[in-house]
Amino acid sequence: MTKHFYLYIDECGDQNLESFSPTFPIFTLCGILVAEDKVETLNQQVRNLKKQFWGEKSIILHSRDIRKCQNGFEILFDLNIKQQFYEAINQILAQNDVYVIVSCSIMKEPYIRQFGKLNDVYGQSLSFVIERAIFCVDNKNPEGNGRIYSIVERRGKREDKALLSYYLQLLDKGTYWVDSMRMRNRMESFEFKWKTDDVIGLQIADLVAYPLTRYVLNPNQVNLAFDVIKPNIFQQDGKIVGIKVFP
Image (cartoon, rainbow, N blue to C red; front, top):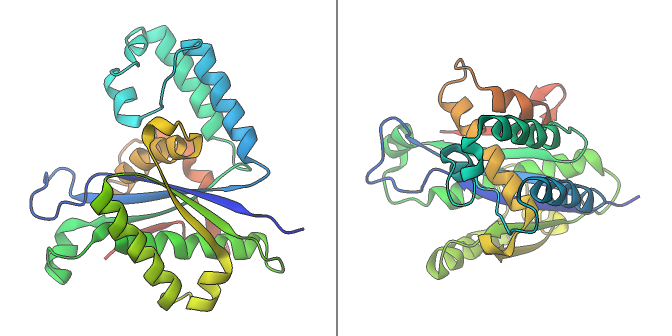
């Protein structure tokens, strides 16, 4: 049976290559691949969690706000509520049959030495994320014609226009590992959404991106959040290929 998939894409860090903190010299683009028959399951689970902790109040899950207990997450200053919240969100994120992680992390210092400061690290990362999403769908649906519907958080007119242009180039030219015909056969659409649109998949991608990025920066550091999501990282032949570190 043919399955279609939704690829929700969010970022951690920024694209700035001119000035960045030496303690966080990285940009990560994180994709969450969800089969169409799992989307509503994931959406309902997160809606139930929000209702449990915020009632009817509208809230957007955002990793930075959660960590800093701000912009609606002040309730997490109560340590009992914080523990309950983390247990609830970890239960959702730990499900390894609902979503798959495909990501690319750009290490800024070696990237600048090799390519300079003018390249678009977001576009570069997108090509790796889409490649891995296609590999994953090929594995899950080798004989079908499953399509990928991409959803990306809006950043601004100029940035969104540039990213859409990069995506269209991928469809036209392909990549080293995925030719243009294979790319066009898998990729169905590329849509932008605002954070305020309350797209659950984008919020999950945001929550996953930070611990994944911390892992890439320091794989030996204690990272309990990464341990929760690790089983969901795309694997091929028993090898993790869902985390691309470049260069």
